[in-house]
Image 1: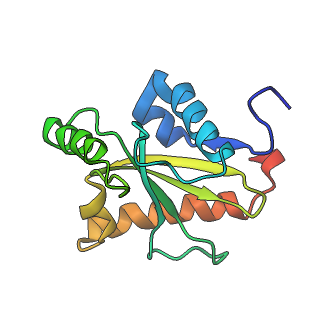
Image 2: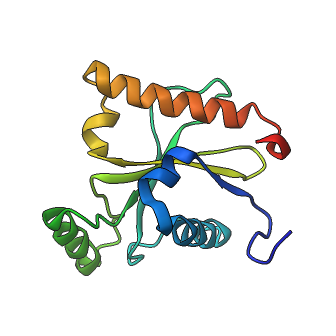
Length: 152
């Protein structure tokens, strides 16, 4: 095991890699540090916000498809709101309209699936397009959860 990989494996999809290109190692490192800390992101954490399961779609394993809100880097209004939430110092977890979708298995291994812009609208699955997106994420998560990580 390499330094920095203590106790957990973090894998990522080609989909995520194509979305964030050269920043993937940075994202994985920040995510790993957060998860190794054993705590939820604190309200003052600049990069991560609320970390919660989706209610739907359901995964075959009974484990939830997860998402964590991310600092919105390309939407000025959302970024201003993010910063205001940090400055409010009210103990509430930050939210944005950008989320990192991921799955976690029972061994505390993670698969980072995709960055989801318009996260609130898409996760409500009110249109067929949004249902298709969320079902695709569930399919990817199910493949991960059903796999032998050595072959993933």
